[in-house]
Amino acid sequence: MSALLSVSLLFSSTLLAEEKTLLVLGDSLSAAHGIPLQSGWVQLLAENLSQQPRPYHVANASISGETTGGGLARLPSLLQQYQPAIVIIELGANDGLRGFPISTIRSNLSSLITLSQRANARVLLTGMHIPPNYGSRYTQLFYNNYVQLAQQHQTWLVPFLLEGIASQPALMQADGLHPVAAAQPRILENVMPYLNKLL
Image 1: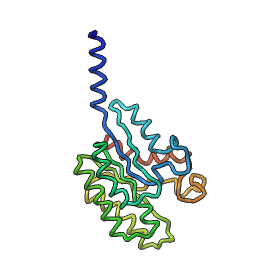
Image 2: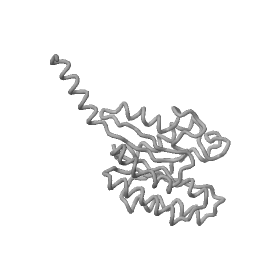
Image 3: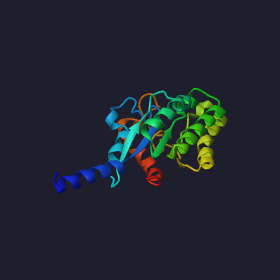
Image 4: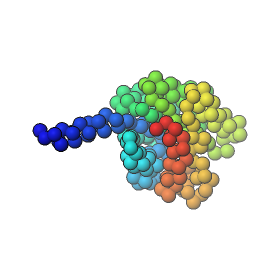
C-alpha cells in the first residue's frame, strides 16, 4: 500500500469518526407533508450541515400524525440506533389539536428530553402554537409547556417553529396547518440561530 493511499484512508477514517448524528423527532411539519421530501426543512438542514467543517449526518425520524406519546415509544430504539449528538424534538402539535390533557403533553415532552439527555445528546426543543379556537386558557398552557420545559431541563428552545409563516396564508397549504415548499427555508431560518449554539 502506498504512503499516499495510507494517508488518504486515515484521513477518510478520521472524517467518518468525527461525523456526528443529529436526530429530528417530529411530526408532519418535519416529514415534509404535502410537499416533495427534498423541499422539506429537514432536508435543507441536512444539506446545510453537510457543508460544515465537521459535518453532521441528519437522521429524520419524523412521521405525519405523530404525537408525543408515539415519539416517546419510538425514541429509545432511535437513540440506540443513531446515538445522536443532538436531538431536535418537534412534537406536541397533534396532541394539542386532539385536545390531549396539558399534563400528558408536558409529561411526555419532559420524558423525551430526559431520555435524550441521558443518552448524552444535547436537545433543541421547538415551540408550537395551536389555533385560538381551542380557547385562550388551553392554548396558553399548551405553549407554556415548551417554555417551562426548556427552562427546567436547560435546553435551547426555538420559540415558535412557524414564526412569520403561520400568519401568512400564502405560505400555508390549503389545510391551514402545513407550510408550503416555499416556506421551508424560512422554517430553517427560525431553527438555525438556536441550533448553531449546539453545533
